[in-house]
Image 1 (cartoon, rainbow, N blue to C red):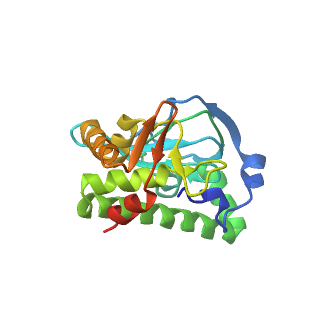
Image 2 (cartoon, one colour):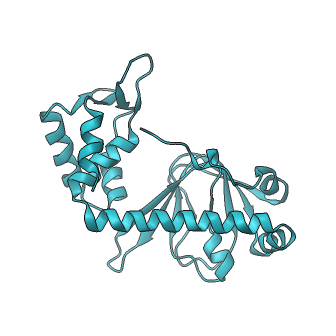
Length: 220
């Protein structure tokens, strides 16, 4: 159910480029790396760990946008446009990054067009993800979005055939932020799926008893 990471996809520049030219920084879980409105224009390359990208709505509510892992970048939009950051980036686990300045990145792209192509591909992929998120918010019900997220989080149980689980059990508040809904809506759907025998709650994991149901009823 869980797919390949961005680092597994082809077309990424060598990590060595960032390791050779970048400044290394480490961030603890929950630590803010970029703040919305920040006028710095550095590009960050994730060496290991994971970050979440969050927008701030007009009413001041955090809107979850994306989750990025090793082999991906963030901050490239501000680096190319020179504008202030339009989103905050927070480490969701201990994360190490290599930071390259805007001037260094432009010089790299001018010296090696393949890096410019890679960066454009990265931005196009990010735009596609944004479009998919908007599509799901407009076209899918909360129940469909919760089921799709549970299916995304599920992983095969080691040593068991055709069994899936989310280990440790998912944080419902985090899922709610990710789906831009309320925790109560997520809890209600998880409880309903448990009552129907689709899920089973265990102390250290959430068992997915009918993965096909989750995927088939979450699609448009």
